[in-house]
Image (cartoon, rainbow, N blue to C red; front, side):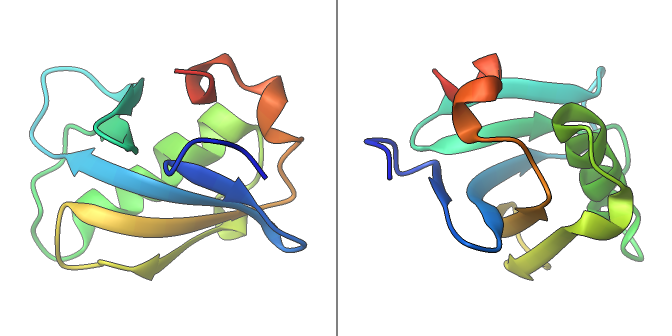
Length: 98
């Protein structure tokens, strides 16, 4: 367990509180802001494109296949809960140490 509400480690993997920022000028993980991991994505939130890009961005950041990233809740909003399976311990990722 950690002191951050932005993530918690479970037997399945790392569960993240994510704030998606669609239509951003750049793509990537931008650290912990307001108790959530800020993820900037270029896609607009139309027809699931933003969620697909979010999953791809998180898969790249955590070094796991895209199929290991699952949006557990919040698929239609900016605030989401995401499970990343097969990730290394959270301490391995500097962007989670915000």
